[in-house]
Image 1 (cartoon, rainbow, N blue to C red):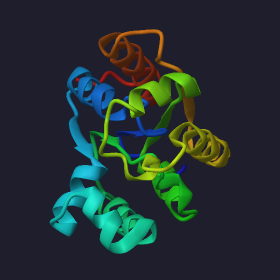
Image 2: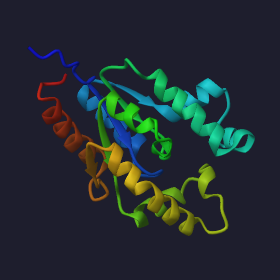
Image 3: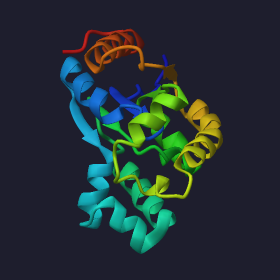
Image 4: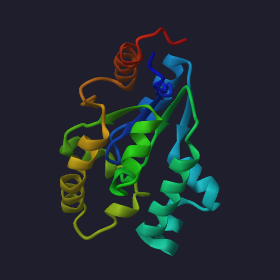
Length: 182
């Protein structure tokens, strides 16, 4: 008889900034009857400051340390859709943590769509550069192999509405866990 420990019933959304993790994640959580958790919100709460201020005061390394601590804190979570920060996969130890937490889905729209979405939001510390388009391209080039290694499933949801994306993902999640979810 096998004594394998079942994977927690969690869905972890990874992907570049602007890919829709928070928007689709909220909708997906409702579809599944799960709680929604946003790691960026947990970081803000833990640090008691907004993310741009964390980057300003502690740099990216300080932010990534907080992000990893928040991810560790999520061990033992069950029945949640967890939206992560776009760079969570840049810390090597985070990849097995993500995979141990549940089903990891990479929301992977084309670069041009990501760039358009990112430029609508002025609170993105990593693209406050002289050439944001090049920064997005360079970061995506570095991160793609990391997203690939972390994800159980890679999905481009750019050609559907967030509601349609959540519906399709909910069906994939149900099939993955092979049991009906509320």
